[in-house]
Amino acid sequence: MPHDYRATITWSRGDAIFSDGRYSRGHLWTFDGLSFPGSSAPQVVRPPLSLEAAIDPEEALVGALASCHMLFFLDFARKAGFVVDSYSDAAVGEMGKNDAGKTFVARITLNPACVFAGEMPDPAALSALHHHAHAECYVGHSLRSEIVILPIASQL
Image 1: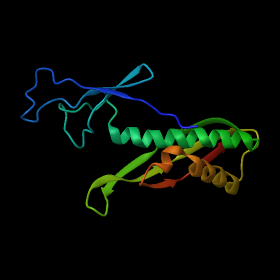
Image 2: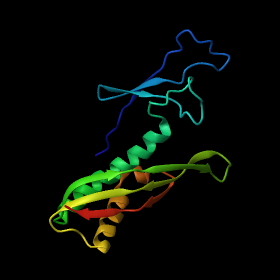
Image 3: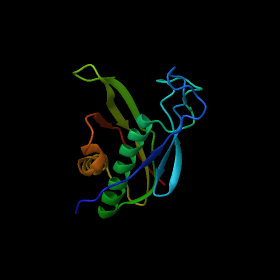
């Protein structure tokens, strides 16, 4: 059944002169009543006009993909009879140019590290679980980026 997702983004100019381009890119992201600081990436707009400690759109995209992949992976691992004790991913997004010369997130590399309690999947089973998670990830289906998955597994 179709459903939607909502985000509220708010920004205010404050005392800045807008026309000179020297206004803050800091803003607020609100999801389900929880708010998070957002900003332009400091590599694109230098501080103090951007906020280094805030989430930028490119980071959020990488995080959304990593989170979606993890949630599917955990469910498929459970269904396969494995017990995942912990999961972390130091995902990386790389910018590039598309065929039209426009900048985009060209590649996202997921680096999922799983710790299993009890039986651990062999390398082929681990790869299959990640492939299945990638094949079902809604966020992954929505992206043009190349997605690379480099899993690591260990046992308690």
